[in-house]
Image (tube, rainbow, N blue to C red):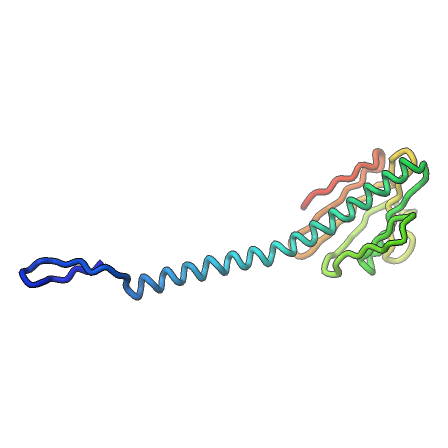
Length: 157
């Protein structure tokens, strides 16, 4: 508010904002929108890697269930070079975005070739066990497969 003297020495109030006040408010608003924009763009990366990890977990759980139901071994074959995986008994090839790095730790006899690894589930529900890690930038998810129980756990690192 600005005080201005009037005729008989009285003060009159003139309501309004100074240019400096308007500039500061505008700067704060622009800064707020830029922070929101950065959070939204980084969130899509996190969402994509989390979705890929959940899809792999779903495939692993399906394979374990099929092994238990059919009383036959079922495998999930992961192609590290192509960023894809398949489930035995299914013809579909599942793709993982190329921007996601995958590493697999499994039994030595389940490494079938360069860049190929299997996670095998047996008729009793057990498995060869292992760990699948998905990484993109600073975000990573790990999938642990218990060899004794075949239980699959997903957690962020």
